[in-house]
Amino acid sequence: MVKIVGIGGSLREDSYSQLALEIAARRVEALGAEVEILDLRQMQLPFCDGGDEYPGYPDVERLQNTVQQADGLILATPEYHGSISGVLKNALDLMSFEQLDSKVAGLISVLGGQPNSNALNDMRLIMRWVHAWSIPEQIAIGQAWKAFGSDGKLLDEKLSQRFDQFAQSLVENTRKLRGVS
Image (tube, rainbow, N blue to C red; front, side, top):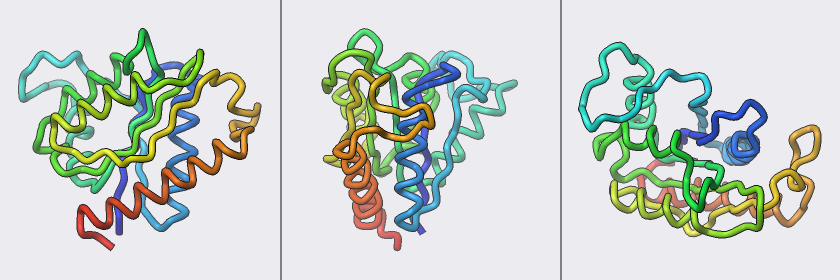
């Protein structure tokens, strides 16, 4: 079975990035994959200092072990100043090739303004650097306050279809590239 780990790069309580991650996770689960979301809002992670060990921070080991055991990732981030959030970058920096090499990654960015690809391109660069594989399908949600209803559901049918395509691609490509059924 395909195992996917989702990581949301926002610390906000009512995070649109987290909503997008949860929607993607449900779509991936509907295709038969197992999904675990690591909620950085609930984890105690130190700032990466370039070291290999972080005694006193059991959530670093939990992050590393959970990602290492996964076949793929869903990374969702708000776009801050034209790039990914610091909290997501820090979480990725706390891992190494040991955890990230050969993972298949689906990427989502959420913006307050117009949709663009800045954060997505930065995540692709990071994934390539750690020898992970980013799927071609990606999601950029602009003007996020208009994208979700008060119930957390997507309001736009075309955006909903993009989430379906994203999930399908993530599961299919993870099966192919990781050799799991």
